[in-house]
Length: 294
Image (cartoon, rainbow, N blue to C red):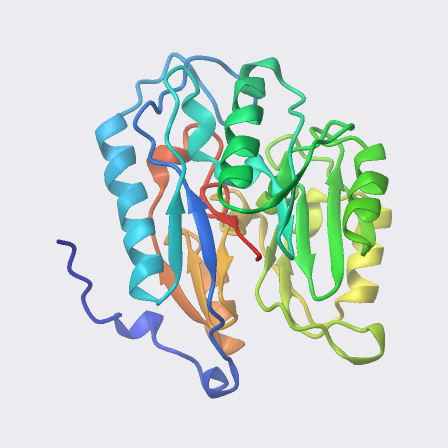
C-alpha cells in the first residue's frame, strides 16, 4: 500500500488557494506493462537508449495513486502487447457529455490503439463516434469552459477541428504548434481551471509555452486568456505543461520549478509527480490521463 507524506512547504497552497475549488474528475489510464521505446515518432524517443519498464510502472503507479488520494476516480484499459504507447491514454479519444470521439493516428506505429479505445468506450456506456479526419484525441483537443482549443502542426490535421466542432457543437479555436518537441497541444498548454470567465474573456485558467506556437496563435492566446500563466522555455522543456488539474490541485513535473512557483502564486496547489521514465517515450502526466466526461 502506498503512503503519501504531508506535502513539503514548497508545495503548500498560496494565499489565493481558498478561492480554488477542487472538482471531481474521472480518468482513464493504462498500466505501462509493455512500455519500451522501440521506434522513433517524436524527438524524445531514442530507441538506442535503454528503458526501464519496472521504473515506468512505479512512476505510473504513483500518478494513479495520487489521483485516488485526491478523491478522483480512475478507470483502467487493459494494455495490449505490441502497443507500448497505450500508456498515453490522452491520445485515445476525446469525450464530452458521454460522447466519445475516437482517434485516427497519423503515425502507423500507433494505429493498433484506435480500436481498443473505441471498444472500451462503447463497453462503458459512451456513445462512440468513429472519426473521419486524422487527430490524436485529448493530446490535441483541450476543453476550456465551453470552448475547445485544438492543436495542429504535427499530428492532428486542420480538418479535424471542423469535425470536432460538428461532433460536440462547441466553439473550436485552432492553434498551430511550431516546435517538434511539443508535437501535441497538451505538451504546450495546461488547462488549470474549467471555469470560463464572463463576456468571452477567460481569466487565469490556462498556462502555456509561448515559444511553442506561431505568431497568430500567440496573439489569439494573449487576447482570449489575458491572465494566463506564461511558462518559461526551461519549464516547458521538462514537460512542465503536461499536467492534470482539478481546479485546485495541479499534478506537475517536479523539475518544472519555476512553473511550480507560478502555480502557488496563483493559489493552486502543485502536486509533483515524477514521470521521467515515461518522458523517454515523449509523454508525461497529461499524456497518461484521459478525462472521462460523462
